[in-house]
Image 1 (spheres, helix red, strand yellow):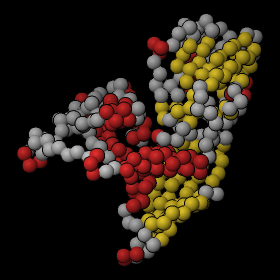
Image 2: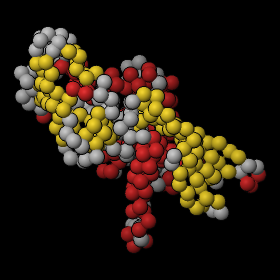
Image 3: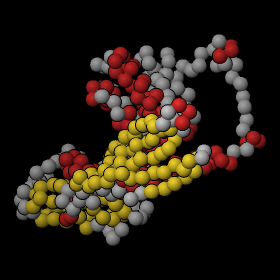
Image 4: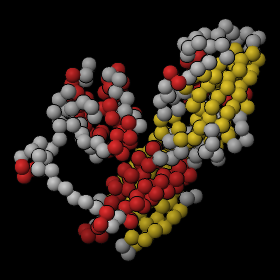
Length: 333
């Protein structure tokens, strides 16, 4: 059970795990209560913890796979039920955990007929499969199949470039996210000036990290990210006035979202999946080759309805999701 205390105002804030269960090997659930907070503080903490849990907690995944004698990912091999593309998708879903940050290699060498599972893969000592029964491929004839895999530890999503792969090696669009979903809610107690807030956090992981391990790592990453602000000195801060965009001068605030280099890097690696959009809006964006937040911010609010089958309702849903998750808005034309 995870417990921790810190002091704020006159009351200590406590975190307690009130429910923990393993629904299956690749789905672990935990529910935590954090309290008491002053009114308005829970949303600040809840949003930050949700984003940090999804984006900052490291996970281990397969990033490359090599098949001998294969030309492209849609090739078929005689004696194998799936295409190479299907095998890559199955490898992408394998949940791994590792105590090493180094790049590792694994080999699956199996002779059929046989249903190949994660337990058939020879993993390095520092890497372990969460579910040894996780399916990979079915060999239907008495042939040998060799799959060489590259394993890495990272955060979030990674989209690989097919042009960088040679000689039967294919990229796997890795999902290095042990945390699969996070919800938080706010509950009030007390009355009048004594009203306080309670934060409920629900977290689901793929089994490579337990919910309490994930929430602890997310907290540590948040502290590391914010610690530089503790050392800001007045002489390190410079101010400038842009007369063209100043409200007093009557200038427009911005034609497009003004991203600095850090914003560009973050949003270029943040996928629209994290907006949790309705299926219709999400699929429309995907069909328009809008995969990241940076891609989305290239469209103004007025341009968005021009996306095929993307109506005003979808624009409103996207705008609301951007504000709720990232505190930004679609650019104005």
